[in-house]
Image (cartoon, rainbow, N blue to C red; front, side, top):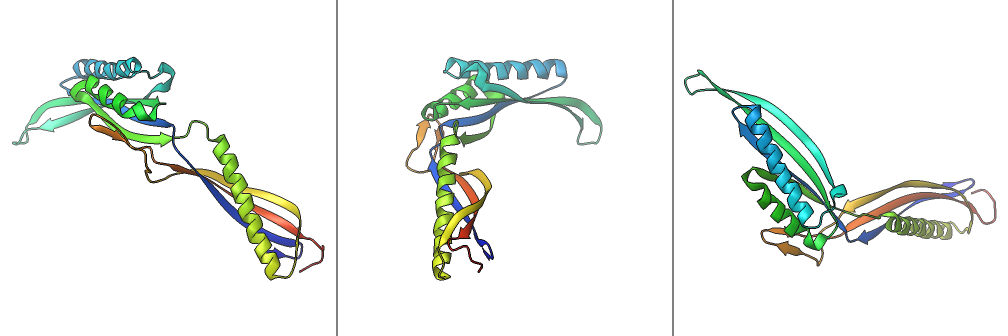
Length: 213
């Protein structure tokens, strides 16, 4: 966009980064005739998962309880008569796994430790220290804005002057497709792939000659 006071251009930039952490959401689901039976069984299953992760090098500070759900199910027979109710307990645990290569084995073993009540909700990848990539993405976005502004200035027969204002548009981490690296342990394959750290910036340049458009 050109103005009487120069030109305003938005640039974008991105940096591909290989994730270095895995967020694993694990848990247990137990059903029983009453809470006094279902809840201890769920607690024991979750404890086995937690202890298994600790034994395999996961730091206790990287473990966090995420879910505690208890609900009753009223049931009937095929004939429509009341049947004994059931109690369902679901407990969740989130683990931050800082060795991507070992994470598949850690998760697989922890689920085996938890037994038949164990479950896995999701595995997501992250970047533990995104600041450097964000700085590179911002630099790429500003360079993109300058290239665009210089092209428009050239087309208009003008030259860029000083920067008048800069407005940051935000920084995002976008998951990418897996590339090149794949790690497998037992039946739990883990592919880290790459993530794109992106940024956008809007820059207002004055014209070099200071004259209006």
